[in-house]
Length: 145
Image 1: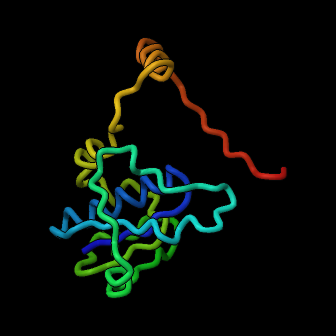
Image 2: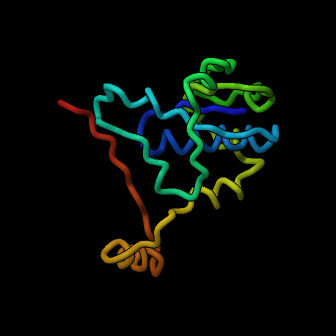
């Protein structure tokens, strides 16, 4: 079984899910999510956000988490050792490299499609974006600065 600790914003959760899902698929293991502690005391009030996507939401029990071998991300760049992990593992990190899930990118893309079709103003904006060259910019704002 592969369990992944989820925390941070949506982007972080997407990387965490994709890496764990890839590892589970490649080792023919079950994937479970841990959203039980990663959001407590979050300064930005972030919360679990993957429920908007076509993923299978299996949440790990405290017993499953305790029985797993905990793997903490060593650094913020790709670690090829992670791709060779087998057995019951608990992933704790950001895992921000597409190299972790590139072998199963088509599955990840399908699962990370939005569950509900866009409606109203969101549909209108999406249609406008599809008809022209579009750019998206994300600004990270620092609180109190």
